Length: 392
Image (cartoon, rainbow, N blue to C red; front, top):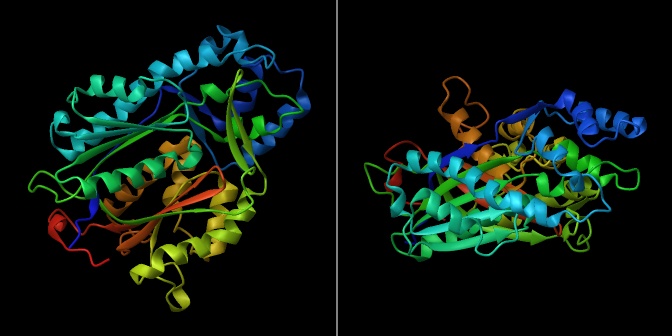
């Protein structure tokens, strides 16, 4: 029987700088010298009020922005300065999360055989993988891979790759570290660039890390989730709906307002295709509610679309909604926060109604294209679960 990969440790981290969402429009328009645009400021306040986000963390600060006027002037080239900051920020933030994941895993860092670093905030070689490996004290022989510019599906893509590596390399222990900072996309508001308001309203900074492997070694290693199968679907004709473009002024995001409707119209078919071969299709009147859900918290409207399309009961997306509320959309790192939140809720006495009784679940992320990433997960039953066989 093929050995299935499992999540053996999870860690998360955020920069110290934190801004409450209700205060963000005033902060953003002040630091970008844009208070003479009251209509745009009022629009952002309405967007923040509806975002279901309470606060977000940022690597950049008011002092950093003040020291780089090119960050807020679209006429000035700023890519070099942004990437120079990201070159240090990404591996350092990734390290904070990775240290926690390795500690939970319970083995020495040099036992890591493969390293995957994923981010939308970089364009260097050697990249953040080399720096992170050195910071963590990994072996010089560690196999390194960098995943750049997969948008909000960066974390899902990296986990899919980790599963493949773990299952095809005997004894492999794969560290996935996904770190995102929004500085490359930070820019002043303009009437002609309303996408900027969307990005500035939703995105925050954070890092998540996961250790992945097969055949857990008792009594040290204990699986949290088994990674059963993966799939990726690109919705035809959506290539321009979500895009990322590196330019002289940084990283330009384009996010169409049609994304929630596209999710609502296509998500169920993707899940049917992913789950039916495993015998996990729709079940009677309960629909999809017998599964637990790790949905990328791309925004309130996207989560509402998932919920409506799949006819989910209230509370099924509680983990994703809490991550969105506490941190905003952290790009690829956000899905790891959701996995961590699901795990925490499962272990919490008296609060398992949306997850604890569900053995099977699905992780879903969205990326440019528009692409939908899906991973079927199976929750572990306890500390002795590592030797269970998986019929799939």
